[in-house]
Length: 504
Image (cartoon, rainbow, N blue to C red):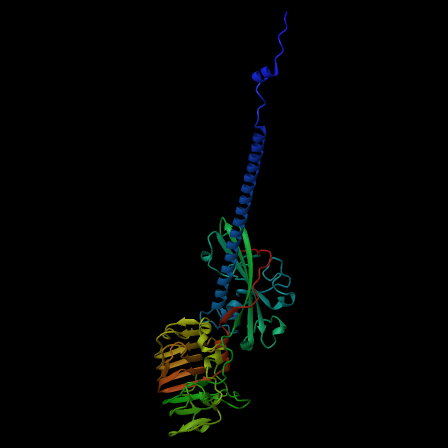
């Protein structure tokens, strides 16, 4: 049997193709595809993580904004009740709720309760009040809604908060004595104390919540934030001239003026009734006292009693300064001016800046601290605090009582015309200014009495009838010192106190 011939190389090449090429390309493609898949998975995870972080930051911001909104609302609540915080009079507030000893600071019915000696960590006083001040500090605790072991929030409107968020606000209060500010908190002033030197610091503790299933139940909220904000009362004045009548321009051309002076304005035993402009450098020119009928006398001569009545109103048939007891008075057409009439060559040309501490060009600073009204016809005995009249006219007609001795007004009239007619009794301070209307004017007729002080920083149009200013330092101080509320610089902070046991 013949053997087959062995295939030649050419023959093998013809019947067995060469080795396939491209395996490395396929392998590289698989590796690249795997890397792309891994990068895609990583990018997806990073994106998901960033979305979670972004969502958490968003919810945290919502909770933070809810906490800030709650704190702002609490400030407005304290502002609207600021008189109660300082007043030691149980009947201070006309609605019957009273001052600190009746309605707000009362052992059984007050909304401010004394901090316990050893507050728990979740108590508003726990951690936010120094141990040495616990005995004289208070926390907000309304007994009409509080259950045992619960700490109520300062009332706020939840509907004004961002969607799916809520907030609860507590507060602690400390009274400060301006005469001894380093002494720390003091026990709430009692009736008869000089509250004109007292201030208060309220620390707002606001808890904000977001991502809430039920905003009424903070346990259903996923995110929380806390804000602590101390606020304090302040005066809107830098320094009041301690005299009953301050006149930048002529006062009065006609009419009758009776003034009870500050008995110690010029020094101990040196009374001052009028502080008039005699500064020739002022653009308005010097003030002259006109041709009216003047009479000034001490308070016991005007009241005809050695004690000022509790309501400050005249109790005799007709309180007046008789010529025999007057310090300054008019005989015929001649004015007999005594030592109580001060015509000052150094009188401040910018009276607004002297009184409020800001130049008249920046009057909006003062205006922002006041209740802005368009006319004076709505003022009455329940009016108190700072009012700024911005409009065509401020007019008091008929028989009106504005303010009260314990709750006086600071009436700042920037109206074009300020008119007092009829028989008006005003408790507080009246400031007539031309900062909004350069030609603003003031006129009066009838019988008008101001228990406190008057500053005329505008032109006098017409004056007839009788105008009386009965100086009272307490009324003037209270008018300017119990209504301004502001935050303390550098006082904002977040805090880490445990959430209190809220009342649901």
